[in-house]
Image (cartoon, rainbow, N blue to C red):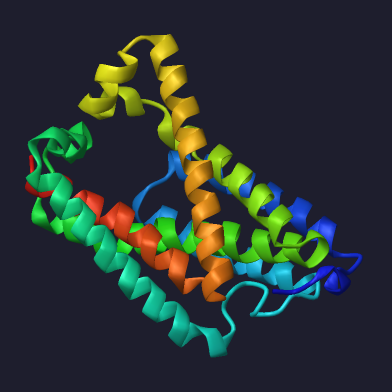
Length: 237
């Protein structure tokens, strides 16, 4: 990974601009869905990669160096297989099967499932979040302060990114309703728990990016957790 001597005068302005772009994107994506959300995700990815380049960053800083892609793809495939095995075990065990229940799956058909698994999750969620948090933000902060700071900053902001998507989560998933209830304080606790959980997941994603040297590794795990969650939730309705 780049060391501190690769910092440039534009690094921290680029970090601040990146956070600003993500704040606006988070508000827009909370209101938009479908094609508008996909276009927004693509535009934001382009803007953020442009900021990285403006600050003197490289494809390696974003975890996208050509020489690391094959290794990253191997990591991604292994992680996808691991998540599949864990989800299958969870679906087969009565004690954990209820964790897949989600009222947002009601009324979903096969076409919508395929759209979510192969388009909305990889493009609208995984691509944007990985480029933003484990690519650009991680790369910029690592240039200035090293990978420890990069993991901390990226993971904290990744947790906060999930505040808006977590609204209503406690009532959408019956397993969470049992824990937090359906009151206003319960909803606040559910959001706080979601932020902490996603921040911890962000730290794991950062470590995968560091160890593999490629953004493809966290991308694979991120896609598997989200997309296979939809698949198993759909099958167990």
